[in-house]
Amino acid sequence: MTNERVAKLRQAMSEQQLQAIIIDSGVNRCYLSGFNGSAGTLLITAESSYLLTDFRYQIQAAQQAPGFEIIIYKAHPLDDIKSLLNKHGITQLGFEQDIISFAQYKRYEHALSGATLVPTSGLVEKIREVKDAQELAIIQEAAELADRTFAHILNYIKPGVRELDIALEMEMFMRKHGATGTSFETIVASGERSALPHGVASERTIGQNEFVKLDFGAYYKGYCSDITRTVFVGQPTEKHLEIYNIVLEAQLHGLKHIKAGMSGLEADALCRDIIAGYGYGEQFGHSTGHGIGMEIHEAPRLSRLSDTLLTPGMTVTVEPGIYIPGFGGVRIEDDIVITESGNQILTSSPKELILL
Image: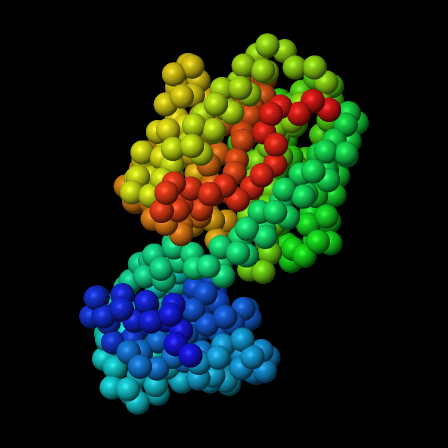
């Protein structure tokens, strides 16, 4: 069976005139081979695929990485890599410059002195940007689990409950229903803390008449979901309603118009321009969204700095917000997949302001 992901990598290698490449990133290694052990290196040549790992993963590697020749090293993979380079007559070897440390590079330089080391950046990550049907199905399941978690936690949010306890309940629910972890450290930020864009759960107890911002995701079958909902405990003031409705308008506008062929900058502007038009541009300081997949933050970005063109199969978040120090903040976030005709929303939790 042909490994389409490795085939795409070989095409990228050919375009950069690389005879072979070492893959040290654990995420990229798993993406290409299926092996998710904690120790392993891939060596990909024009015709051969090798997975080098240690004795602990001998059985696991054989089970998870069909199509790869498994090599169990005794001390360090570099001795075996050196032999493989000699076997294939490889004198030019690519490596992931964004992954390995300078110290690791120096070890490669010393141990693989017969080959010229060529730095590469983003070869596998570029392939990962567009998800295949299997990946999209898993991300959809991860998004649905996040939706179920939101519905579950609404019964627990009330005055006197600690943010940490809410986060714990959410994480336990996700794990009980199939997640192997969380996509990132769960954010539960209430009251004035809701103005912290990344205010992870604290000892603070929820009070009356305040926002509670929940940003969380399920790490499920190796893929991430990411959703934010902001609810209100008590009765909101006009100011609370104003900023909530502005963020909601901006987010809905983005969801309606983001499509293939649009740049990350253009997608970002869909939400940002609305918030800025109401005078809150300075209170929306982060990007509108980011790619999700095997990692919680990956390409492409929906930001003022991104010229990447959106392509069908890309999965991204749409998450505008307004954050007012000393008052509170609102973010509303969904996961979407770019399609031929626009986009499909993967998360479906209600977005009208929920009063608890």
